[in-house]
Length: 174
Ligand code: ZN
Image (cartoon, rainbow, N blue to C red; front, top):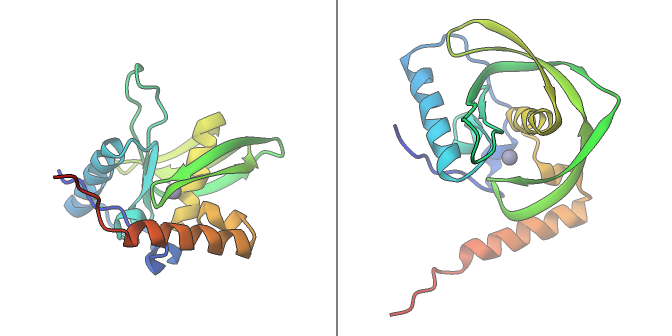
């Protein structure tokens, strides 16, 4: 198991459309294990493979509360089959866009078809936080980020701000 480095904007890789997984083998199994470990390490509730630089259509989610039993779920080649007209709004953050939260309105319910870790085809109806999280992660597989919901001006401003954070050297006191 390995905690992977998460790539952040403006890395061009994040705009890439990920490729479907054709064969699920030992490498893909390891990738999922690493994604879970990385997601939990950085306190995320979802992570797509592209965020660790691997352009494959696989993502992990766990929207359980801290004091609840963990509910890890890996979705391979997920496809959204249905979206509700009802919407919900969450303030969303993204491990690939540090220190940025954006209110985003999305369909409240989504139905998604995917392959699970055992290779079985599954159908999942997601509501509330899980629905938002799954849509956010599937957006990653299509190279779409939460800042793409904003105007170009606001988006450029955020990217500039983040690039600046990264350029500042680590501060130390000795
Ligand atoms: Zn994200």
